[in-house]
Length: 218
Length: 218
DNA sequence: ATGTTCAGTTGAACGTGTTCAAAAACAGTA
DNA sequence: TACTGTTTTTGAACACGTTCAACTGAACAT
Image (cartoon, rainbow over all chains, first blue to last red; front, side):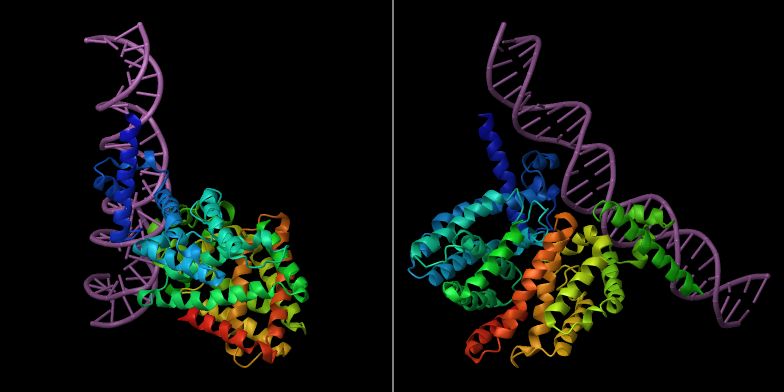
């Protein structure tokens, strides 16, 4: 019973926080306000969440879990490019209400040391959960991938996705139309490259890319 | 005479700040400490610098000016790839003492709204000063660039450089050897692509890249 | 000399994220 | 019921970046 109440308090705080973030944006929402809106003392927010950032991280985690089922339709397309397009479009739509404050996640994105970075250790489970979607898209569409590239392809697509999402978050065009254009254009290019990479002629090029990936991963 | 004293105070604060940043890192250095070390009241630091971030921005600006002459030897190479390599190596060496706290510049890098971002409006002059180096390398080595790509090539190289620097800043390998590897590998690839792009066959590919650049720039 | 002006300087105060010692509420046991 | 230990909750306190009203003093005008 203790746990139940505790869990409820936790989500009460989480939801008050997300409401505030949506209304006022992330930097404008204070921990005191979040606590007040939850009818709770300031310190309690820190009992349940390690930091203000951690609240966003938790939202992002839940979001990806919610997103699983929502991606099901996207994963029905036969062609890889259609799947990638549909996956990205689904994410755009799902995250749209929170687009503004998701910038908070990205503002520290470049710093791999920040726990909020998509590349950080704390966000590893989230990241790997996300990899799986791309792996599935590759597996099920049976697109042919050179053996040497195969183990890294999902990761590469994930990085591509992060770039797109970064652009989308800061996209000020009407209805983020520029992001949609970017996707339409770049998905085609990515898939073309992927297919081209099968040419035996391009083995040295693949080697270079693989070396780069190896260096990037340490 | 008033100006003289004023300017001296300004650099006194700037240098105390940079010393502290180097010793303790950016987040660990407080404005109070900076002021104290300059023998000055806290508020005065804000009379001369709009914010803590602004101090870093000013350092970066001066750094690029210092860097001009230092890049002269690099700009003597005949081959583009050698120039690019040398330019990056020169930057590595110059920035090395401040590598740690330059992360402060990058941690907000992803947020184009942050004044500290290399893509922000406040850092435009700095950025364009930097473009020029790449433009010169392209011009003077006479590497052939398709007409449609030419106006954007320096910008593209600059973005490539920012990626490399980002990696270098967070590179924990001994002597940042991984960054050097990354440069050696990737410069070759970039130049190969550039040369390949001249093939008439690749006109559609160029068109795609140009569309992407256009979308990215809005 | 005296007064005026204003760049230069001060330090207290504000609001922030975060910490922490203490209090309260609870669960289990006697 | 009373005692004990744990989990939950409180709110004051801390250090930070930043702001601001007030003060200082050199340069200049009268």
